Image (cartoon, rainbow, N blue to C red):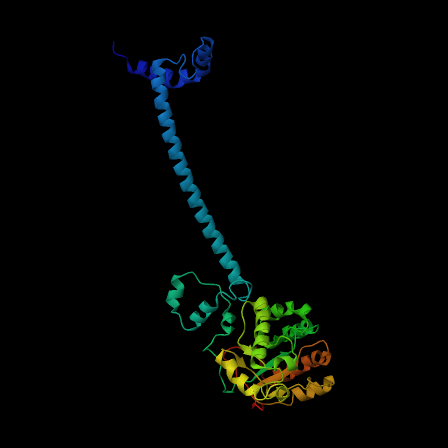
Length: 356
Ligand SMILES: [Zn+2]
């Protein structure tokens, strides 16, 4: 006898829903009857149905797992995309010199300076880089602008720090929106954090000497470079790269080095440039290398009138008068239309004559 559709549906329901729900009962019955539980008591037609239920459920599960994994992956990607975009926005809002990309992006920063097409930049996500990473020392790329030009600029340069006075110097520079260059040493390591602080406030970090011990530094060419790279590593630790700007202890014109090595300045002034460094002497001095009153420092510093003034100052715990004189010196030159700039690769280079 042929089943009606209704009967077929009912039988199907009994087979695939009702009987499996009653599985516990027939298993118990099976156990009571002392049969093996797995197959015990299960009606043949149910077994057949059960097999198909298992197959269908398995396929459904597999499909669900696939869909789940797909959605998870897509969700993750979207989230990552949004996070990356957020991060990029935050970074773009920041000072360009904060944290990331200082050292490792040197190459990229240089590349973009070498004139990447703007259209290319628009097509790729903009890299957040510190343009000053290009200040890193690179053999074959020595700053060499010896033309003073028309623009009136004061390059304030502070040798010997960081020191207990660096914070005060930075506050004054901020107050006048003046930028400066710090030729650093490792003489007072407890203040080395001020190297990054100065850098983050937009000043340039240059290298002076690690030990500031003339007898050791100028004992030989090797000793000089050992000391230079040591202070270079100190800079790198703080700002992410070894800068190419240096100032010789005593300047390139010093004669004190002759006490330790005859002719060493002649050798060094050429060798540093071969390695990609440029040395900056000065064409103006505050006089704070010796003992001066604040008034004398102001008088000395404000006596210069050339367009490019590379002013020698010192940053050390003993040089409180320099800090005292600084506001007046800055006000003087700003009132004459000078801007205070930090040294960069395009800055005017001052060289002394070499005397040893
Ligand atoms: Zn010095």
